[in-house]
Image 1: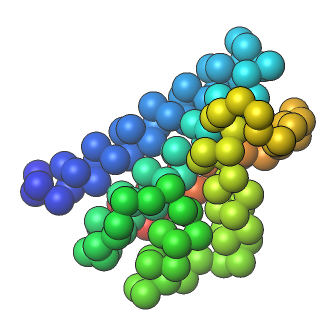
Image 2 (image 1 turned 120 degrees about the vertical axis):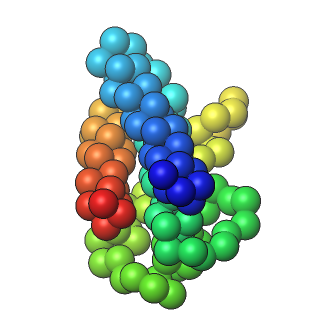
Length: 129
């Protein structure tokens, strides 16, 4: 296995850990909505970075999912639907992690976040494999 493939697989594995953490947390401690959505954002961030590495596109350190998709669009196009999902998830990178945030999460927000993370995983792993 090449070093590049190893690194891509490591990013995907870390993304899977985040997604697993989100699902298990929501199942057992559903009131931890902020933690669940944070891990969904992280899942997608890591998947996008894996795909950028696959495409040989350099990226800066960021949690900005839309920026990462914009970089990917140099070589592959995402639908507006995935831009919208990334934009939705992007707010969970930092805002929900600290006290005094004004983000009030509903069950639908959490379920959407998990669903979007799963959709990104399916899309990106199919493109890589």
